[in-house]
Length: 129
Image 1 (tube, rainbow, N blue to C red):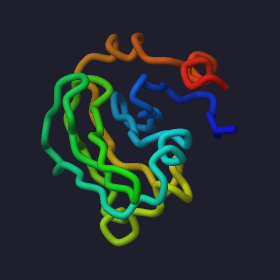
Image 2: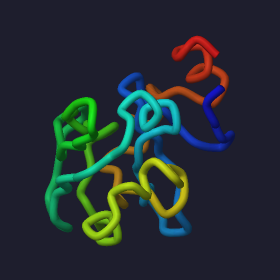
Image 3: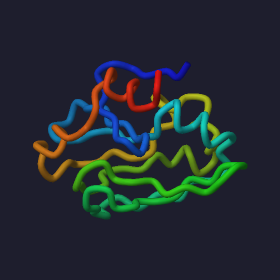
Image 4: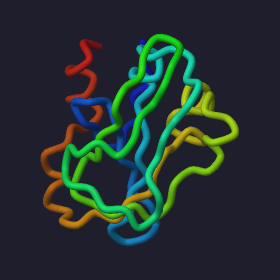
């Protein structure tokens, strides 16, 4: 059974968004379900602060023992910060996907776009839990 915290927003592609204390800024990572499906993460390619992405545009890749997968921006946004700790230890995505394994902090272009994302219950249904 995957860990699906309440209070987050989820995408069909298994990214999550967590609101930060800064207005319009969200932390983005992949869900516990996604990291479990990928297996041991060995490398993550992330964008630089200041890069901007459209909704569902690929912002990087995640490489695991099993596969390489694209990472998708959940909404139109600008990257505020990337998690430099993943450069040294990409396995943080496996051990703590909702904590130390976060990937980006983004400034959302239009918060109305968030309405299209899933809550905890909808995401649990999406992954069959």
